[in-house]
Image 1 (cartoon, rainbow, N blue to C red):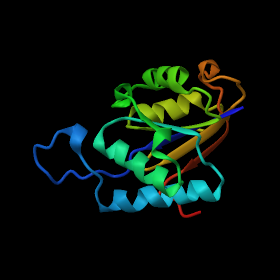
Image 2: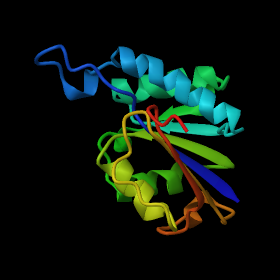
Image 3: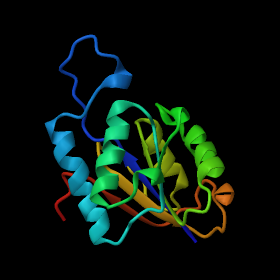
Length: 165
């Protein structure tokens, strides 16, 4: 059994005119939401063995903050440029290739691809939009990451910063 957790990067700062999309940092809300969502994961005992992140500043910062809050060593976080604005198909390919021996893998990415990816993986849950710093997690009845496929996600869970349930 494998578990995959998808995280859309936290809210980014659009206040600097002309700043490249790749370089946008987190804004105050994003800096507050990332550790909060990591605490929620930790409270549900959802601690990954490995993390894959888009190297864009907003995604990598979200991943770094969450890794710190989850008390994960920096070595467990790997960047892959293919995750920057990736399609669902690209994310699936990266996971199949880089999932390794991790039992629980966490991926940090961008919309619209990450919402599409969550929906295509899930056997039942449908998300209209994975909000910034939103988290989707599902289990897969497979032995290797190379075996995960569309519709194979079971026990889906979805949480986001403004969800106060």
